[in-house]
Amino acid sequence: MKRISAQDFYTLLPYYENSVSVNMHLVVYEQEVLLMPASMQVIIQKSFSLSYQGSDFIMYTHLPENIQNTVRKYALIIGKQLQYSGYRGVCGIDFITTQDEVFFSEINGRFQSSTVLINKAMHHCGLDMSLQRLHIDAFLNPKCTIELPAFEVGYSLYGYSYDPETFEKAKYLYQCIQDAPEVVCCNDDDLDWEMKLEKNTYLFKIISNTNIISVSAEFATLLHPDININEHIFDPKHYHEQLQELKIMLLSHGIKIEKRALEKLTESGGVNCQEFEAIDLLIEKNIYINVPYETRFSELSPFRIELENNGEFILMYFGKKLTTAQIRTASKLDSHVSPNGFLYKDFLYLGNDRLRIYHRNGCYFKTLNKGCKFCDVEVNEMPLPIEDIKEAIDAYAKCENIQHFMIGGGSEPINSDFQKILDIAGYLKAKFNKPINVMSLPPLDPNILDAFKDVGITEVTFNLEVYDRMLAQKYMPGKGFIPLEVYDKAFQKAVDLWGRTGNVRTVFIVGLESEKTLLEGVKHVCALGVSPILSLLKGISGTPMEYFFPPSDQQILKICHKVQKICDFYGIEQGPVCRCCEDNTLKISC
Ligand code: SF4
Image 1 (cartoon, protein in one colour):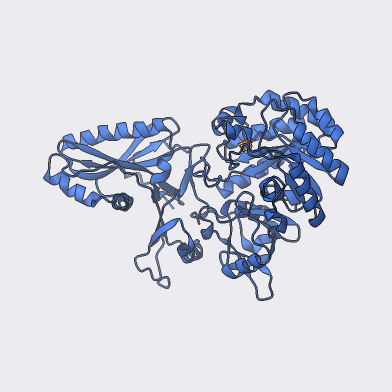
Image 2 (cartoon, rainbow, N blue to C red):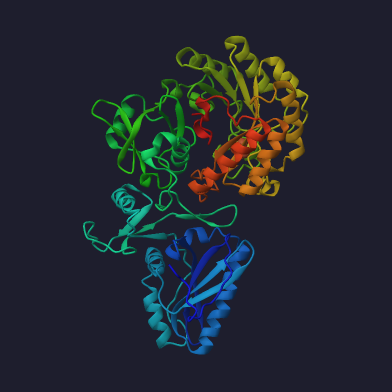
């Protein structure tokens, strides 16, 4: 179809791929310009256009301060110019902002779709006020006659419209909304779902008390995966050929558990979601996935667990059966108390076939108030005696199916002598003689790794998390200052001791840095013989990064393919080597 006509006039604007759209309401009086709280706009790409779908006032407050200051400065200049031209009342100014620049985009001389959120916030603060009343006031008075204290708008909004391709998904989402605690209201204007609709007809709008968008490492807008129904990386009809796509979606969308299924799980010990706010799901006999559960918007996830009458759990996708599933329940030992008063589950975590042992309580960096911003390990300085650890290890080893061990958890100071780790490893080796992985900071003196090997440690994991060292320092104000050279020396020594076969590993968090630097990091470690492990960014509630989302499903898939290519080139297997421990990584062994 021809979209451009030689007879018409057009305005050409540059397109900034890595940018976000911002909107601010102004109220223009004869002698005053009021600036209202600004929002980020949700703009989605359609076949031949960019379409406004919603606004987010919460995420705007997390944009860099220099951007927010410039937006206010420019908005005031524009408002004064409008005032001078005789404009009165409410208007909205749109900006496009990159990481360090703000560009004026347009003025809309009207109320905005997001006006309702500002009114709602004023009402929430106890102000008997609305933008409509301010609008009238601006025509009647030279200055604002209404006392207006500063207020925040803690809401976001997203609107759905009719598209034959996404209609069933929109309908499914609409049915789930009442269960989602983050959705404070849904406006459907008495929508009749049976009615024949034209494309782009408005369906319904949700208002949330949390952010629905986030900003990617590349500085582009990311819509929450459970709000977004426009992405298609998975086709349930080709389910068996798309297990990687399925895993990516489960990891990024999370899951909900239907009431009857939850009751059955509770009878068998309760859902095991101690680690990372996620449950352990097993599908297709040997695919383990650690799926986020009861996390932000997971009630809107397309994935749901239902209970069949024969007692089997079923994994559903947009209300349709996908496959049978097993869900791991909590171990009875988790609530046992050690001699010094620690709950076993506070320092041991039973995985699918592995027992993880925390060698210390809390993390050294957290005690310095320099903990990683995505990490939920709590500040805790109570020493954890080795006798307690040994007792609990024995208890789990007696009752559970454990094939290997991991010693790891909070970090020790960078100059640690690793003695506690060596003591635990020595105990495990002598008693069980099974593989032992240590996940820790890289030692300053790599020669200590000889002692690791002598004591029976068979694998080591030194997590870089972020390859871009500037961002590493930003997101990990303690650990991120460890120079890359310290990691490299430890990696080289470890590869000399344990080989290039996957026993030396490092985790990268997908979503914390740009795709470009992430892939550079993967190349860097593969060249050293180290296996990269891809872990997806999770905005864990209560952490400073709870407002962040992982990249889009499409981008995650693209990254997985590129990382695999790099690994193939260097002849390195992606980590982890154990299939059961792939559960919270993006690797899938089919
Ligand atoms: S070093 Fe590890 S345990 Fe400590 S804050 Fe960072 S991620 Fe958490």
